[in-house]
Length: 366
Ligand SMILES: Nc1ncnc2c1ncn2[C@@H]1O[C@H](COP(=O)(O)OP(=O)(O)OP(=O)(O)O)[C@@H](O)[C@H]1O
Ligand SMILES: [Mg+2]
Figure 1 (tube, rainbow, N blue to C red):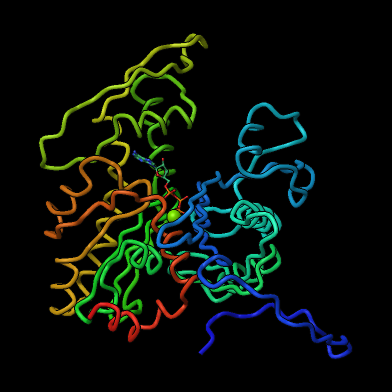
Figure 2: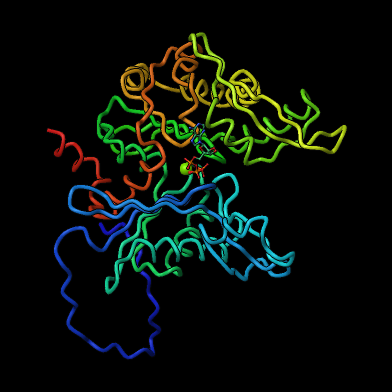
């Protein structure tokens, strides 16, 4: 079965001129895996048994009056943030993992495909990861947009499944395996067995929500306003999640704006503050995880106990592993390259679509 849907621009009236098929080099050259994330878009291009990896911020600069007219994409758009004339704004095409603006997402994907394409080469297969709970409409939109951005053959797969393939998890095993993908906008908890998704819970919470809570908490505790980017860097530098483990309380100096004096004021953000800000989000994620566990058969519980991997940038928060073990008794592994694994999995499928077929996986594992 061909799982890719081909772009078909022909009408009945089109004259079809038969040209010899251009000879393509054998191997994995003409395929790309793309993880279109809320904060980052990662592009993986198979190169031998490794990947060329590229990352761009999921940001586009648009005219304020016409948000469909895209002026810059990725790094270039990010640089325009805060420095642009008033009639230009930098925005994100995705919100909580879901495409908000088709025109903006198309611009981002065109850029991603351009970045992943070497001069003179055509990219004919693109596999794109989208949130596991995406509706048919969202899936079709992602597929259409990727085609219109320049890919001939497009396959849309769940980010969770893609991450599992990228992380080399035993997805074909009947006992199952689980991926917890904690990104910027959302968290996917995905159970995979016999090569397919058997259960999924998506919690629309992630690192962005933690950043917002840090801003609010700092205002509440110090009467100081800080920017969202300062909140994010403090989180990355000293961030932690409440747990029973004995983790060091680190601290980071931040300059904000005093609400009382309207003057700059230095405050200290420590790991405890970040943990307090993260707590409501962590609770929701743990609740979602608990829901999945309740539904699992004893066999799947065994598989998940032995094979659960956390990916996504927010899985880097210290204490995550300990907290999940405290609350749910599930030992998890934090994947060591958590932000590229979805794109890598997508690239593996793009190069070899049969990677998705359970019998192929099973054979490969024997
Ligand atoms: N060291 C770190 N500690 C804590 N959080 C981190 C760290 N590094 C990155 N992050 C957070 O990870 C998030 C980005 O992760 P990722 O690139 O996986 O998200 P995304 O794929 O763009 O989002 P989504 O999957 O929700 O669409 C951001 O919220 C970022 O602040
Ligand atoms: Mg993601």
